[in-house]
Amino acid sequence: MVEDAYLSELSRFPLIILAASAVGLWIAALFGAGVLRRRRPFDEGMRDNFNTILAATLTLLALIIGFSFSMAINRYDQRKDFEEGEANAIGTEYVRAALLPVEDAAKVRGLLIRYLDARIAYYTAENREELHRAILDAARLQKELWASVAVPATAQPTPIMALVAEGMNDVLNRQGSVQAAWWNRIPAAAWGLMLAIAMVCNMLMGYGLRGPAHAKLLLVLPVTAGIAFMLIADIDAPRHGLIRVAPRNLVSLAQALRQ
Image (cartoon, rainbow, N blue to C red; front, top):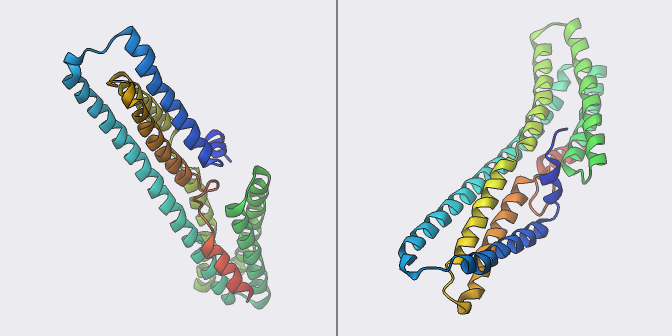
């Protein structure tokens, strides 16, 4: 398992992301309004040029936030689609198992139900121990599942046996696709770029402040950007946070098979 541990831990606490980013960006704005303005007093004669630079920088920040949000949404949708595909593959193979001899069919169906439970445990794992156990259980059951169809398919190499083996192969491949989708996160470099540009925007906002009467406006951009960062991080983390990828189709399939 090669998940980004840093982002994974942060995604457990969306409100901390909001608070930390908002406070950090607000400090950057105060730095621009205090330190930078004292060291290099603002020349009102360059107000038009400054506003152009500020608008361009804010536009760049908005584009990067929008692009990152789009990346997170697309990957969230992809993870949900893969979960649905995995449930369909397991359900299809459960039906195809009826084509096997009676004893082999019962064995395959029993293994599929246990494998289904292991996959649900993977989606709902709350800590590293539960996740590691779910991955090990699924890997062990995958070997048993393939052996359970490989033996009868080898003994009777017919088109029907090939169909059963093909369905089992699809079940095993789906797990790899799901794993790859869950590892696919917004790169740390993209987060660093967003934060850097947001810091620059807030320093410019503070530097261009017209007077103490507008000091309260320095909170607007930090809070807004902090909410955006929180939402992106929450959507991009499939296992933690407020927005998660729930195994609804797998749970529904497990309930249907047990009935």
